[in-house]
Image (cartoon, rainbow, N blue to C red; front, top):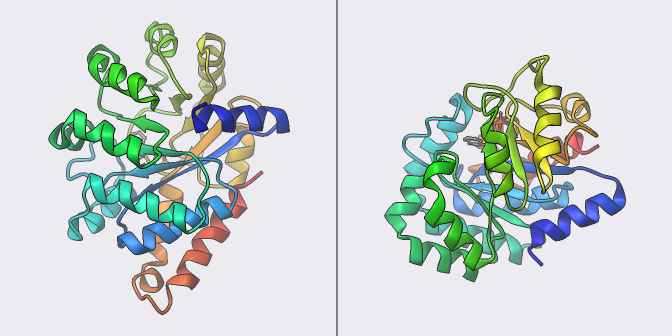
Length: 268
Ligand SMILES: O=P(O)(O)OC[C@@H](O)[C@@H](O)c1c[nH]c2ccccc12
């Protein structure tokens, strides 16, 4: 069984919802990222989105854009991200990995090599935010053959596409809470609960919500309405604040501890 499915089964038995951090891998460097992935698992994350840095992150707000720039200064590649995830496993991170990449780095790497790399490194899921349903046929077929869940995104504007997107979904459906780019939000649109309910009734797999969630109160707001929440920018911001510590191997543990403490504060 795919680790993502097993995790949602466990959470259902425990009556809990998933906490899914997003990290830009290689920010500030690969060694720090390996420790931060392990810290996410130690802090109670149920799975993790491993962001491949990209030069043109169209859907990302300033916090994640800056994180991508920092990682690209270290020339971090898609392969580095996957190898860092394996290193984090050796450090004790025993949660499902979801590789998060825009489509261009995947295409550049080559689909055959890409899925071989994912299979060899125990990657359970894949999110490609800029690949629309109409164009994801080949990627979906290959992911299916590799036993890797291609996790689709739906937005409040998806309307009649929700049925088509959820019908093919594997792992979970990523419900984008609001239009625009990633980044912390003080509130959510009033119609979000109807949107989530419509996705939940259409989807054969669990649904999770992301975009703008940055504190425990907001995580609680979605309790019972989804099967999990994704938190990215708020965590990446904590990493940015801890850069002076994370960038110094002698002080890295303190920096990692600060980020871990923030993630623990999100755990309901
Ligand atoms: O950063 P936020 O607002 O917490 O949202 C999660 C988001 O970071 C992560 O899932 C993500 C990072 N880059 C993306 C691009 C598109 C959709 C989602 C993402």
